Amino acid sequence: MKNSVGVSRRAMIRGLAMSLTACALPLPLRADGERPHGAILLGARPKGSLLMEARRGQVELLGRGLGKTAIWGYGGSVPGPVIRVRQNEQVQVRFKNSLEQGSTIHWHGIRIDNKMDGVAGLTQEAVAPGESFDYRFTVPDAGSYWYHPHNRSWEQVARGLYGLLIVDEPEPLDVDHDLALAFDDWQLKADGSLEEESFSAIGERAHGGRIGNVMTVNGQSDVRFAVRSGDRVRVRLCNTANSRILVLRVGGCGASVIALDGQPVAPRTPSASDLILAPSQRVDLVLEMNGAPGSRAVIWENSDMRLPLVRFVYHDSDRNNRQHKPVRKLADNPVPAPDRRKPLKVELEMTGGAMGGMRSALYKGKKMTIRELVDGPGLIWAFNGVAGMPEKPLFSARRGQTVELDMINNTAFAHAMHMHGHHMSEIRRVRQTRKGPRFMDTRPDWRDTILVDRAEAVKVAFVADNPGKWMLHCHMLEHQAGGMSTWFEVV
Ligand code: C2O
Ligand code: CU
Image (cartoon, rainbow, N blue to C red; front, side):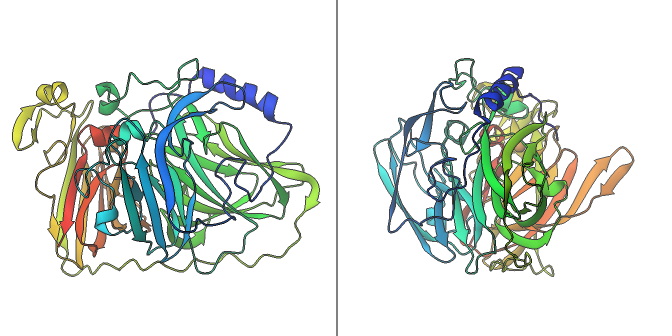
């Protein structure tokens, strides 16, 4: 489960330097969305159509005055604007592509109208440089979602093209603050510029993907919020990294999980797996700021070293004495319940990658050796023996049919399996051990992305109720590019 490459010592030292220079002034929680960039939610919603331009920009990822990084971002910033709408409201975005390569916007986790899913080559053509595309869709589910390109995502997301999409429940929770936080890691060179040579490098594709050496929260490397003892804060955490599996911990305050991948769960103390965020996954937490005045609460990241990602700095004396209502379960979204009596059963076996022993796979209907796949299209992974997008769907379901999909990981790496247009619920998780199969606890929460560890098989159920062509892929973007992509259709 551990990522292979560490946050470099340089980044750690930089982090230290940061805390010495920048610790004096905790950032106030403000409603104007200025600082920390893009984090504040209790503000206005966009009215009418929103223009989102993908373009180049310069961002101080390392902190103010510590060097600029050339990025690609929506509006030239990282992350792009927080889009905030109400449940069942329409989102209207005019996407303008001012990059030098084709792009799209995919609305991750939204059970969306297929035409608006933004998958280049499957649901639309990539929007060419200089062109625009109008996205218009209603959001059936409340919760925390995000958006990113679905064309050359391994490069475009790594360069900074992503943002958060928040869908408000009809009845808001009783909280004092509501924060949306995008966690990312970057591969930066010593001068702060983005490491570009390794984009699409086969080494990263074959192993754990592109793992960065600098972590940011909403495009900043040192994020602090001022709070008071007694405050209650909703945080919406999203892993936008290409491939890093975040292992989070929360200290210095109380925490309950209230939603995963946007879908409500009965409030509970977070389990370890609730706080492991695979690429693209989200968790919503309610933090009870019950620490003493003058102390701190921290969201830590532990995937390879203990790194404070977000710090909440308690006011020295001021307290919030307001009585909050108990944290209740958010209203369920209208995700249909599977009918397990006559499901369509589908198996998906993952093979390939380094130490995976795959010798050959089908590519565009032709059997190719692993050498030919690597040297030609740069592929090294396969689903059911097929590398890259197949011409025929993995399966075709009748609208309304329950599907049971068994995802079997016969590789040496964990994979973050993401399904478009639907959410799925785990019904069985088995791990192969030397002593034979071991049945693990299942996590039946609705999710759009499920982490399948090596030697694990995870069976999920969902109702294929959304007509169209939908992708199913590993959200480790180098794995997706390296062959772990397929699609299914609902007719
Ligand atoms: Cu977040 Cu297929 O995407
Ligand atoms: Cu993967």
